[in-house]
Every structure is written in structure tokens, then in C-alpha cells.
Image 1: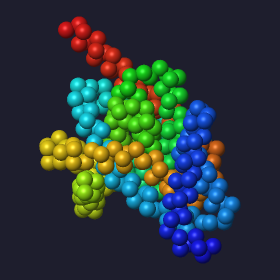
Image 2 (image 1 turned 30 degrees about the vertical axis):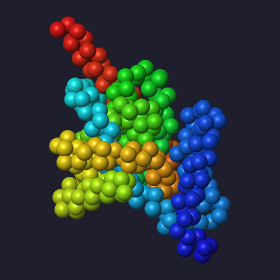
Image 3 (image 1 turned 60 degrees about the vertical axis):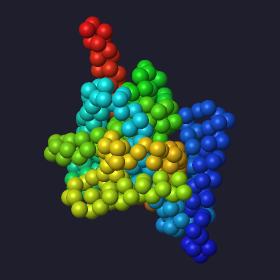
Image 4 (image 1 turned 90 degrees about the vertical axis):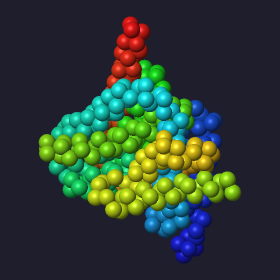
Length: 229
Length: 121
């Protein structure tokens, strides 16, 4: 497969084509599981496995898509700035929501880790699962967790959050746009935020804010919770 | 040139974020420094909204696509996940639902309380 190893456009093309199919499927069947991101990831993995192309070979080209991730995250400040007055007048509720989200993540990981008899290393690996990848990796490393597993859990959490966001809000009767955004962002970081931005401007802005605040609170919270098990 | 200028400003903010990440000994990634920095620059009027708005909207719109490569990376870390697959998947699913519900409901409850308080006054 020397061609694929040298191709600059293969990784990006496969990703975009798979995403396109995902968007088409979602339009045709209005069903949460036909989530473009989920479909594109599954399809891309299927293509790579069938053609015996390694992840490294794929990433050699696909990394150009991820190159944009940092600038795009920086741009999340724009919708947030546009909703500044909303943030100013509701900051107490927003902060209370994000803080309760962070504490709930840490407590629920603690309880579930006990339940599944996980080791201390596995437990600290899972603590930063709901925050943005780059902060999560740092936290996991600091606490002596398995960084690759943290990254995998963060991505699984994100995809899952992206897929179920609308259903969870409906099920628990979360109707306020600010509350929706805070919930989605605190639980499923940037991948959830991508969905929040599709739902609405306010949801997206609040979800963006939650990534930052939840990420920073988790840095402190996880180091405290690491001592519990 | 409009888009080149906008993209240039966004990249410069990202670059300063990288510099902060490099020099400050905190587990905060370049993207988060950049986000906070961009927000401050907009608040202080150092960057005008119209100077970045259109390109920012475009980048945010295509953001889900940027997650495909790292998510496909699950394929490479399969061995680590497989060791305790059921536990990890259950934990990921349950905590995500619980956290989304709790933080959403808490926000909604405090918002309602605030509105009621405002009406009484």
C-alpha cells in the first residue's frame, strides 16, 4: 500500500466522503443514531480495516483536518461574545450548572469505578472523561493514568453526548436554551458543543463557555478526587 | 483578502495560545488559552467582531469534521479499551447522561428561581 502512504489527499477525502454519507443518511432517516459524526467514524474505520490501511498511514493525510481544531476552538469565543449580555445577566445559574456538572462527573466516575472494581490507575484515567481532550490528557498524565485510554474515553463520551444530546434534553424536560447548552457542554465538551451549535446560537455559546469552565474546574477537582480511591 | 485577514488574525491568536501553553507550567492547552484570549480581545475592542466573524462562523460550522481523524484513532487504541470494554462503555454512557441531565436541570432551576425573584421585586 505504498500509494496510500504517500497520498496527501486520501485521509481527508475518505473523512469528507464518509461525513457526506452521514449527512445524507441523517436527512433521509431522522433518527439520532444516524449521526453524521458517528457514521463517518464507523465508515472510515471500516474502509481502513477492509483495505488493510493502518491508522498512522490514514493520519498522515487526515492530520490536515485536525490542524484546524485549535483555530476553530479559538473561534468559539465569537458566539460567546455575541451572547455576552445573556452571560452577564445569568452568570450565577450558568456557573452553578457547570460546577454541578463537574462534581457529578467526578462522583459518578468514582461510584462506577468502585462498582466495576477498577484499579486506581483506571479510575484516575476516567476522571477527566467529560472535558476537552488536551486538558484531559494533561490531567490524566499528572495523576498517573493511561493517557491513550483517557483520549479514547473522552472521544467515546463526546460522540455519545453528540448523539444523545437532543433526546436527553427532551427526556429530562430541559427546555431553556441556556440550560441545554450548559448541560451539553459540561457533559460532552467540544463534540457535544458541535451538536449544541446545530440546535441554536444560545445553546452553542453556552456550551462553548462550559468547555472552558468545566475543563479548568476539572483540573482542580480531579486532583482532589484522585485521593479517594 | 477579507478571509485571508480574518484567518490570519485567528491564527495569530492561536499562536499566542501556543506560546502561553509553552511557557506557563499549567495543564491548559493552547486552544483554551486562545479561546480566552480571543474573548478578551473582543471585549476590550482590540479585535473587532467584523474582523473575524465570517471565518469564525465557517470554522465552527465545519468543526465536527475536524474530530473525525482523532475519533478514528479509537481504532489504534482498541487494545487498551478491549481489556475492560463493557465497564468503559457503561461508564461513558451512564455518566454522560447523568451529567448532562444534572447540569442542565440545575441551570434551569436556578434560572427559574432568578426569574421568580425578579418578578417579586
